[in-house]
Image (tube, rainbow, N blue to C red; front, top):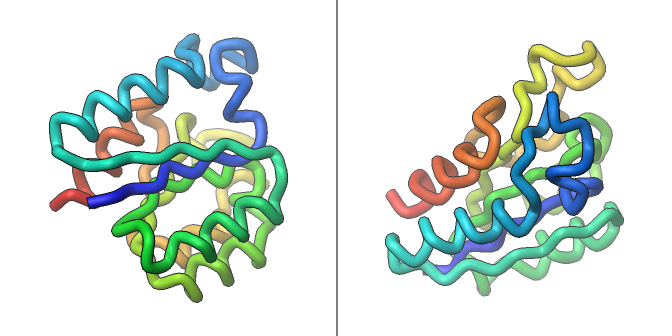
Amino acid sequence: MKILVLNGPNINLLGKREPEVYGTATYADLEAAVRERAKRRGVDVSFVQTNHEGELVTRIQNAAGVYDGMVLNPAAYTHTSIAILDALTACGVPAVEVHLSNIHKREEFRHRSVTAAGCVGQICGFGIKGYLLAIDYLCS
């Protein structure tokens, strides 16, 4: 099994950006935790982090026929990107949307996810553990 972990804008700033919201774990910590879970599950995992919406769309499109599942944190594009939603629905690869923070306890504009409609589910508010839960779900 192959899983793509796809992260959007500012996820590379984990540990520095608003630690009271996102915690003190770094992006390297996130990768290490997911790699460990994937290894225990016997899963190959690949990571992409980009600050560019078009690259997220291209990576999602290119996942078809290559990956068995995706863990997706579209970050700020969650609330605005019809292009990411369209790519998710077109590619046919099951995706779990993950957010480190609980988007429903934050500013009102963050309460709505445009992209979740193209995913099999959404996990939010559990920090890095949300990624691990997503890996577990995709393996089940």
